[in-house]
Length: 223
Image 1 (cartoon, rainbow, N blue to C red):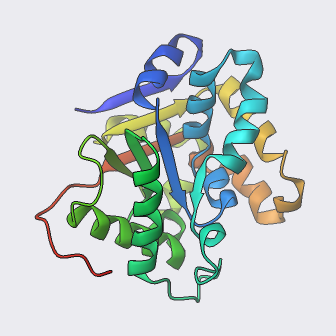
Image 2 (cartoon, rainbow, N blue to C red):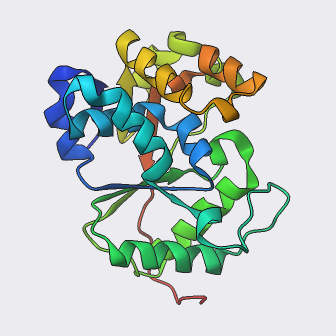
Image 3 (cartoon, one colour):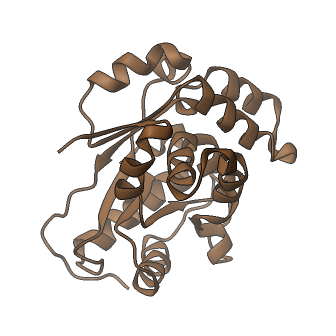
C-alpha cells in the first residue's frame, strides 16, 4: 500500500507511525543531509513540537545515520574505492540486530547521484535481505533515483512525484523547505558551490519517494 505524507503540523501523528523507529544506511552524513532532507524533517517533526524542528533536524542529519565509512576503515568515502558487499552486510546486520527498527532507508540500485558507494550499500542490503538475516517486521525502502532534468526541476517536479507509483512519498511545503535549508546551513564546511545550487534547485529538497526493497528467495550467506 502506498503512503503519502505531507510534512506539516497535522501530519505529525502520521509520520510518527510511519517513521517511529527508522534507520538510515548511507556512506557519510552529508549524503543523507543532501538527499533525504524531507524524510529527516518528517522524523524530526514526529519527535517534537514544530518550534524544535530546526534543532532536531540538524541533529538528525549528523547523528541518525548508519554511516558506513564511520563504521569501518576499509570503507572509505571514495567513489573509486570498491566496497566489499560482505563487509557492508556484516556491519549493517550487526547494527540491525543490536537495535529495534521497523524501517530502514537507503539508496536504490542507481545510487541517486550515481555514487559507487551508494550502489555498493544497496547491493549489500539486497544481499542481507536475501539471506534472511534481518528482522521479519522490518521494512526496507530505497530512495528513488530520477533523471537529471527531474532532479533539478525544483518544486515544479512535485506533481509528477506525487502521481507516479511509489510506496512512500514524503513532501515538504514552503515552510518545510525553509527549515530544510536552515538545517543545510548548519553545516557551513559542506556548503561548496554545487551544494548551494543543490539547495536552490534540487527536487530532493522538497520530496523523497521510496520503493520497497523486496524480499526474494533465501540464499546462502557470503560472510
